[in-house]
Length: 488
Image (cartoon, rainbow, N blue to C red; front, side, top):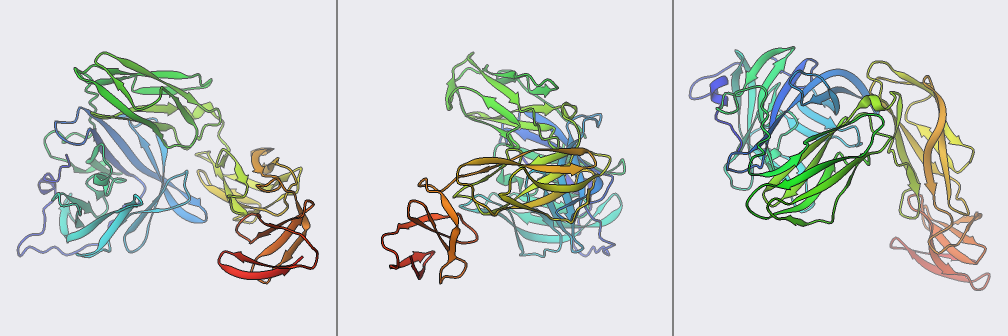
């Protein structure tokens, strides 16, 4: 369960006639900060049997799509070794904190310290409902002898559970975990917070008053062994076992890996599967040799009828050379279901030095137009990104696979793939010289050698419109709700 009572022991809340003069704002996003966060599962009583501590730190700066960020790293090692990239954070002058993961192009609002009582913040969207909290109290507390702003938020589902944010520290559920009660299956609690190695805040609730807690709790339970798999080069497949050591049947409903970026691959029997007492099942884990260096730790979540179990897959970053990484790794597909313009990213996975990109172009063919987000040569800072917009400007008559060429301070080479569909869904091959404008804004008409007519706009690919019959015939067509006409 979440634990909030301890905040009164470490921080003096504003009560009655007490007042505290607000001092300068303490930002969250600064170098030298560290958060130790406990993850416990299953979430509800009895006491969670599985606990581990995630440690987060902020260190260094980078540019992503022209935006300045601080870099956040994470580890589960108590000796503060084996740090892995978690993502990027930035903070505005009015106290909004945004996060961005390496595998996405979208930001997420984590905090907004400019909110007032009655304001609502929404942390996520499940499609059918949003995860929203309401500010019910705003005041000041003392942290390490200094006054800091405190915001108390209430969850909307009538549980009476509140969440506390502290200026400069973040949520008492953990720096990256505001709104974590919406994420079922486990709970998070901030254990300790440091600035430049000095302990500034500590949880004082019994059972949570240590800065590092681990408990695998695998007696009379659904046991997963091993709970950590480490892949080094060469990355040979490994296996973990799920063993039902309870006295009752346990159903395995799903097994998933996060982040799901096609690096860690899982193989297992069809689910759901029910394990009888003393029955086991194996899960095979493989790692693609093009591993995403920014993610060193992967979390395999096993959803069962008695709660969640986890396996950590550690991909040794030394298994792959540091340098430029192409994202998305699987390449880009152009077909009737995708836009004409898409983007890929070049990430500098070197943690210490920049990489200068001098040239990016299509290699050997002329179907694509590539436009970097920065003029070349461009120096990608350590851990930074360069976005490249790719537009399909010529349609091949048959399906082709082409690739990109890049010349940088790391060397030169080609190998990033683009899969371009040939013709259309009905097998027709477009004669490009026959594309002509209709009297509908942004819409073009085309034809092929078989006499099929096609129309498209700047956002979608050609689709069959009709088959021509007699030259000079005037047709009327409906495209995206607009009516127009053309003459064959």
